[in-house]
Image (cartoon, rainbow, N blue to C red; front, side, top):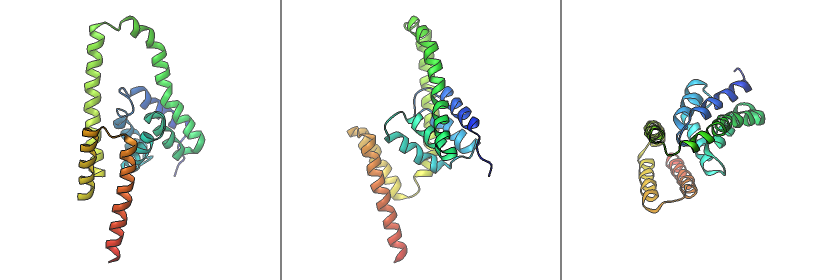
Length: 184
């Protein structure tokens, strides 16, 4: 198997970082396209695991995820270049646009444009979530756990850390239960 070039890692995450508007959640559709479908660096299930770890570790989801994928591909140097690729567009764009946005912050056309971008981000995120649900919700226990977590998060504003810890415990419990049934 051919080794992924460091340039390819940097360029891929530069593209993801430059085309992702709306934060770490909004990067998921492009991340799926690039990492899973284009470069085959991870399966959808692996990406979901990496993304979940990136969400609960300190820092920015996008950077954490890029770092982990870069590390998987080329070790520490891959992690560094994936991280740099992910953050470079933001640094360039923010540095360039900060003054312009402050000057035109009350402009209705600009506000309306950002409103349109938010809608597009919600739509692409919804499609991505539906795709991931097809891989994650595989049986009755996972569907029930999903519904409980969504309900509890919605009504009680649970911390993502609590949700992930509960999911870990749930996953271990379900897997142990399945293994016991196989032995019987």
